[in-house]
Length: 282
Image (cartoon, rainbow, N blue to C red):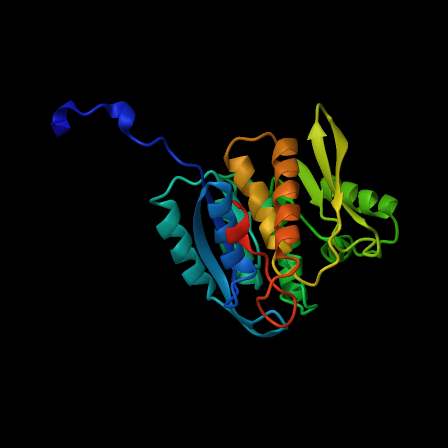
């Protein structure tokens, strides 16, 4: 058929796109690498702005180097001037300068903030000034936040001992940061001897905050490197595909739980092995 007579309906429909702003993991298990793998596995287009380079593997994080804030800005300007982004997902933001630089961009997009502070191997990834900047500049501009137990304790400055404490800390975040539509409280670090793991979504609906719970089998495996990044990215991806928040949460929980099951005997690395995103469609 001549080009001039081609059917415009043959053109591909626009694909949903998510931009991750996070640090790089050269071992491929967490950070930008896990985010992009997750976007591909969940059927959205992924773009990436890198905030930090790390030297890490499945055993430890041995070094980290922040990208200059001005270059982070140049990356942002390049991507956002060209690609229509549906959701921004935030990961490791290592310096106050980077937090302050990206903050104005967040006002125009739905934002999922994964407040990355501590690696799976227990290494601190950001310092106190960066945590303060996160609370001052980033979380107030976020629509959803996805802390694990350790991050929740840092943000709320209190130790958590019970599920009641977890819910109270989540409600505290929702009160302190009015833009938040929801808080996903990841349950992987809580009650680790249990046979199940419960993730919680606190969601603003009709003037009140409702709590939703998803409980799945807990796989007792060390191969959980990048699980938090993967979950937050899956949640952002399903939001970008116009799923309602509870459905996006539920699908992200199922997706991540399935990956942990598939990866529990992962032969990659000698420490906390990564999730095998390429197996998600098997």
